[in-house]
Length: 409
Image 1 (tube, rainbow, N blue to C red):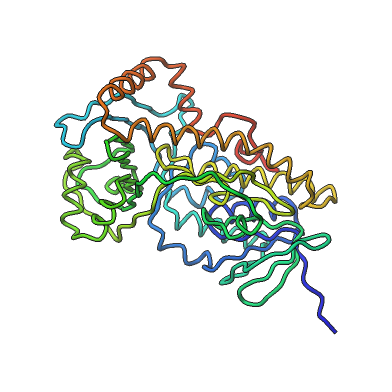
Image 2: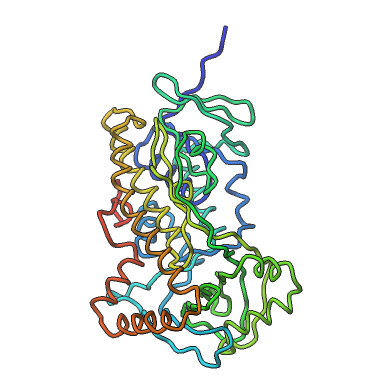
């Protein structure tokens, strides 16, 4: 006799911060919900990821509502000021065209938070909330069945899920399996990620230098003398820099950072990631929802990748939790249609903004430089327009899910 196949309400494929936050939000909002998460790497092994993220006000409120921010606050560095410059690489002076400072309510512009502590906090909270972790394991394939998707894993295990959530990255296998196309292109750039230590304190200031090869960001980390680099460079040059000798890499850093932070040295590994834009043509299919990079992968120029992913997780968790509380099917078409309507326009708007900014600033065309520098200076001198940009960076525009305004579902 064939053994019955286990059933779950929601199966999430992908254990990064987006998948974990969605799992935690659903499990914490609906006690007794059967939520499972599969990933090839257990969340306890996230410490090797060098990335640090700018958590905007909306993201911080969501983490507070999920009960994890209090444990992360000691790891987070508040961004009290941000400056934007536009210059050529060898210019002796980098004029500041735009500045942002602490918001009027006293809230920092953002908090810089390393990926390792973030994933660890979300994983521990999700485990406490009752999420079942299937790790190390990954989804091999799914097929539609009456009332759910039959999910086969690389381990040989089989589960039937009312809803499958693809949080498996920009090259999502589940997205491809569902036949969901993408609009995508490469920028010919790579994002170099590294952590540096410097002699003088950063004093909570973030710097965004627009250079002809792409934006170069210096983002403050906890302790005052460490910063995270997000360095956009032509891919061929980026590969050489990452593979080359440390002293050559640091020499190129000084050309871009300058000397105001004193001596600079790299801590740990250097990594480079190809940069492009990938936008799924729809975010849902039969009993399938895309979140995070599986739905959209954008340029890091505005630091909004994490915050978009959090909005996805919050919106999906809200529609799924309300459906489960009402005794409805969380994978039903009307539930997923609501998620699609909620996230579609906001994601398209942010993708268009980051794409436009990168194209506008990643060049050295004289007339275009004059126009963009005039525009930056104009924004800096007009507080109402400046506030619009600050609100966008904080994740404020549009109809927001409850979690990102700090309210429980």
